[in-house]
Length: 572
Image (cartoon, rainbow, N blue to C red; front, side, top):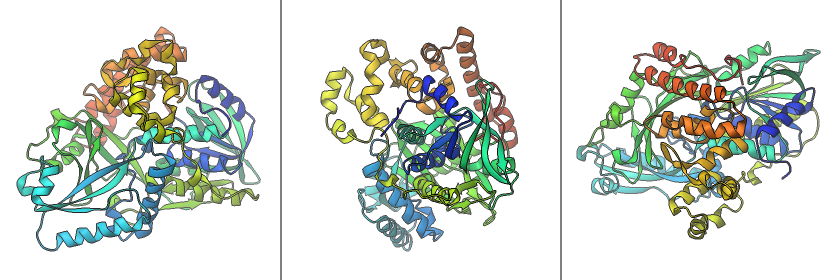
C-alpha cells in the first residue's frame, strides 16, 4: 500500500493540484459505495485513478440505506436467484476477509402467522438462502414454536404469530463502510476529492477526454484529462448522461425509502424482525442502542439531493410494526428519521418495489462508462464490471480485478485487537464497551484515532449530547476522513443526527468549536455551520409533519447549504 490514507486539508489541496490539468486513466464521478468501489478496483489494477464527489463521500444513497449487508431474502420470491447468490457471496467475503471490523452478523425472526403451508414455504426459501452463498460463517436458520419465538422477542403480541423461524444476515454502517472504501483507494494511490462537481465534459472527435470541475467550497474551476470517465452517480445517472449530451442506454428511477430510529428499550427483543407488508417487507433491525425500522418503496421525482420523509411515510411504518407489537410505538418514541433514494433500473414494472436490483453497464457516449442499479452489498461486483468495461475502452492491458483479496483499512490486525479488548481498555483508561465500539468503527486504525489524546486528554471526553462518541472521533473526522462541514460529522462520520432525540442540535456547538480549530474556521464560519445545521434539523422535522411528498420536499429545502453555492442536480 502506498500513499497516505488521510483525507485531510493538505491532501485536499494536493488532490486539486493533481486534478488541475492532470491526466488519469480513469476519472470516477460519484462518491457513493459503487464509485468508491470503482476507484479501489481501478487503482489496484495499476490504473491512475481519480474520484470526485460533488458533496460529501456517501452523502446520497450510501448513507441512507437499511444498513444491511445481505442477499435480499425477498428477491428469492421474485426468482432473482443469481442476484441473491452473488450478494450472499459478497456478504461472506466482507464478513470474513474484507471488512470484519465493519460488517457484522445480525439475526432476524420471521414470525409465522398461519398454520399449514406457511412454515414449509418460508423454510424452503430460507434453506435455499442458506445454500446459495456457498461457504458461510453464519449459523443456518432455526425453527421456533410460538413460545420459543416469543422467548427471544417478548415484544410480540401473543396472537401475532403461531411460530417463527430465526435466520442470520449481516449489517454495516453504510456511510463508514463507503468512507473506508474511499480511504483505502486513496491509500493505494487514487486521488479522492469531495465537494468537487463535474460541470461539463471535454471532447475530441466526439469522444469524452476530460471533465470541467468546480470546487463547491471556493468556486475554483479546473479541467482534468482522462482516458475514460466512469459515471457512478446512482440516482443522478441520467443527469450526468444529459450533461454529456447523451440519452444513455438505460434510465434510472429513484425509489424513496424511509427509516425511523427508536431506542432499544422500546422493543423487547434479542433479535431483529422481518415482517411482510402488502407490497414488500418491513425490517426491525438492531442498531447498537437503537432499532432501525424500515423501509418504504415510493417513486421520488423531487429534489434528489434532499429526499424527505412525510407524516404519511412515518405513519405507514408505525402502523405495520405496531400490528405485531404488544406495546405500540408512538411518534414520541422516535429518535431519528432518514430518507434515501434507491437507484433502480426502470422500464420493467410500474411498482418500484418490483424493479430489478440487478445492475447494468453502458458505454455511451464514447469515453464514458455508466454503471447503475444493483444493491449496496454487490458494490464490488458492480465496480469490477465497470472497470472491465473501462479497460476495454482504454484499449490497453490491465490486470484482472483483485479486490476480493484487498482488506479495507482497519481490517488487518482487527481480530488480534478484538481479542485484546481487556488490556486495551486498561491501557486507554476507557470502559470495555467503548473500546468495542471504537474497534467496530475503526478496526486497527484505533491507535490513529486516539493518538492525539496523549497530548490532549479532553479528546477522550464524550461528545456533549451524544455520549456514544468521543471528541477524538470528531477531530479524526476532520484530519483523516475528509469532513469539511458540521453536517459531515454529525450525519455521516458519526450517526448523532439519527441516534439522538435532538437530532444533533445539542451537540452542534461543541463539535463545531473543535472542528473550527482543525479546519481553520473563523468565528463567523463556525456560527454559520451551527445555524445551518440546526436549520436543517428544523426543516427535516417540518417535512415529517407534512402529509405528502410535495410539501415534505418543500419544507426540507428550507435548510441553507453551507457550501459556496447550492449544488444542482447534475452534481456527482
